[in-house]
Image (cartoon, rainbow over all chains, first blue to last red; front, side, top):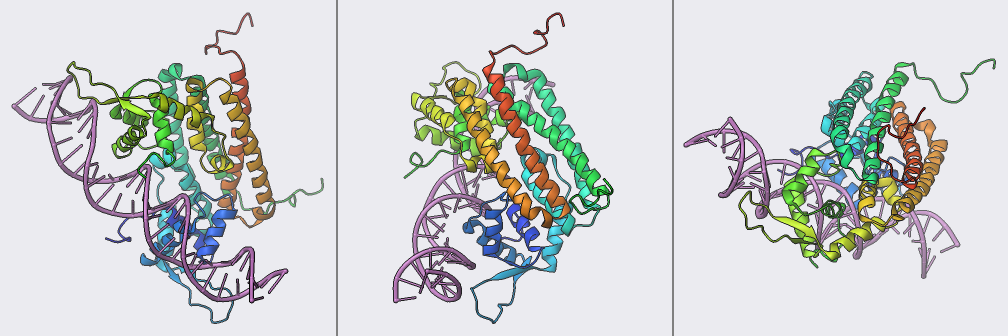
Length: 196
Length: 196
DNA sequence: TATCCCATGTAACGAGTTACATGATTCT
DNA sequence: AGAATCATGTAACTCGTTACATGGGATA
């Protein structure tokens, strides 16, 4: 069957997340990938335009009626109710071990969209699961190190150790992020500091 | 033109690196991806076997003459001189900004193989370049934060900050790794500590 | 008017994923 | 003998990459 049965790709869900903030054109979406550090994916129109079309065949987005006024040619799309539901489902999906070990980037994407497009209990649950899975992964790495660290060449060992450290840092980040979300949101800047 | 003109993929170079440690069969290579944390890529035979074939058409590997003795059916390949040269070229290649920002995983792979398959001046040069590019990237991130951090939703900001921290950690790792390589290799363990 | 950039697409191509097929060998 | 696993491969499919094509609006 043409697209619709198959699982959507991370790129498609990411586009949903971006479109959740308002209607956008294919070009807009390309620009976002090209000009922000969230450029997890390519800015190539050859990837983005077809992905938007797939979202249309899924009925997750629909073209915005073309404004009658002149100006540059634009073709904007917006989320449908089904699209919003698909986004919610993606955001609330339980992270798997495979994602934690092989596709952390997609998880960061998901998390980044959560505070806008998911109920407030989703991000903490997400962080708890990721934290648990990262601890498992860390244990696996320790086990591996115990009986293979000896045979690793120097640079190989350095890479391995950095990987392990990165997992530890991410684990700490999970805890910190959970605390930050628990606190009532506070606007940034030094406004809070009062009387010295 | 069939494979040979085109740039080899990271998977192909990674296989070269693994084969540099001795002849291996396709199955062996699959097992390595499946059982070690260097499983940057999939353990799927559908990826590995065709990649090995491509390496053969490039004349970078060649099949090992089949041992006449019984035992399990195996088809091992080993590096050719051209393969070793291609591996060296890959390892000595100057890292690009795009690799640093979008494909750090491939760079880790390269570095991991360096102490075995490249002259000793290559790893430090690599670390220096990566360090420089990471600093550039960090500056880009700071610039981005300066004028966009305000609009980011809470979880988006947390992801961004974690990304920035990761870059800082990797930067520190580059410095530490360079120092570690500069020191004469020392076997691990607490053997060095003397009389407190 | 000429030129550059905005904006949307398409076509060819290759790699990786998933799933399946097939035997031979070792283990129980 | 039967089961599990070793070991090699192939076929279908889809996505992303690269490169190209087009053409209207802005800018000089």
